[in-house]
Amino acid sequence: MVAQQLESIVRAHGSLSGVVVLDLTRVVAGPYCAMILADLGATVIKIEHPRDADLTREFPPFRQLGDKHVSGFFAQYNRNKLAVNLDLKSEEGKQVFLEMVAKAHIVMENFRPGTMDKLGLDYQTLKAANPAIVFAAVSGFGQSGPNRTRPAYDSTAQATGGLWSMNGLAEEPMRVGTVLGDLSAGLFAAVGALAALRQAERTGQGQMVDVSQQDAIVSLTENAVVTYTETGKVTTPSGNGHPFVKPYGRYRCKDGYVFFGAYTDKFWMEACKTFGDEEMAADPEVATMAQRFEQGVYERKVDPAVRRWCGKYTKAELEAMVGDRFPLSPIKGIDEVVADPHLRQRDMLVSVQYEEASFSVFGNPVKLSGGTFERGASAPSAGQHNEGVYSGWLGMDHTRYAELQRLGVI
Image (cartoon, rainbow, N blue to C red; front, side, top):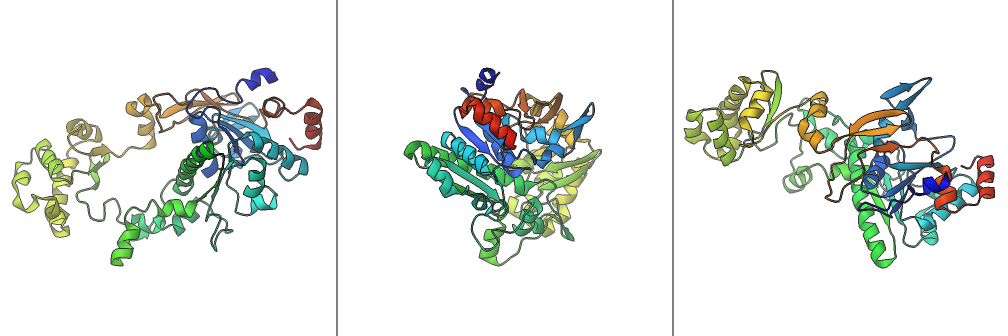
């Protein structure tokens, strides 16, 4: 059995083949980062406490399997990973972890800053075990600064990073409707970890990668920071439009809404031709992009014209009419996204096996000509790969393995 498990412990194929990641993360930000690396070919070993597994194993949606249920949420963010149990609070567990670090390339954690220090597993300790180790830490406010120890969730990052104040309607700022603070931090952590790994491979020296959810959100606020530092103007919600690009926003059609973005001179003329509006095409008051950006001109002429154009057709009719002539896209519900043949052709809907259930989840947006591993992936049950990782990859003898089991360390 161990020999069979060993074959899948360290991947021999893929862009990140041979790279071993020790994943201590929980919930979304860290697991998403590790999932990306796993999809790209890294061997990711998810480490969970024997009596306190990742709480997303209990996040909906669920598939009922007899007297138990399994989580599609967990399957989505933990696909392509191996899973072991390890109590890092025990001395025996710390020793095992350091032995794993000596053979690994990247360690990932998303605890509150200071937690790894309290465990006696800070970066300097890990570096002593393996000078080339890359230590990637994702947290709400980062490893330095006066707010470093404050607890944080995705909404904390959206609030303190400025995004919440910019999103929504002018009358009511709104949180972005997905965990962008978590997901963006995970993406930046993946980039940072791979950059540090490249240097470690070149020099033999690893480094710490410090990614803050707040920092990640600030970097996604487009022109808001430079607008304020240059002009003193604070960016506020602009609804479904753009602060200065026009026409560029949401427009109603017969069966819903579309995004209309024909704001350049070329695209504007294409739109006039597509909708057969010769009068608008010849109007000297809206002939240039700068003219159409003028709020008065936009409200008096441009906006009414686009509303008139779009209001005559359905989403499908508009999409078919416009084709690749200028930017116009139906605003799709998730049901329409899942059914989108373009996304399906690009493997953005894949199947993940978790226990006896198969879940359809989002794919990986990174497409490599050499291939990635999200198709046909599976997510592990807690401790599923204990024997293969500890006895096989780590080389632990049977007596020690059995003793650690008896002590509840693994």
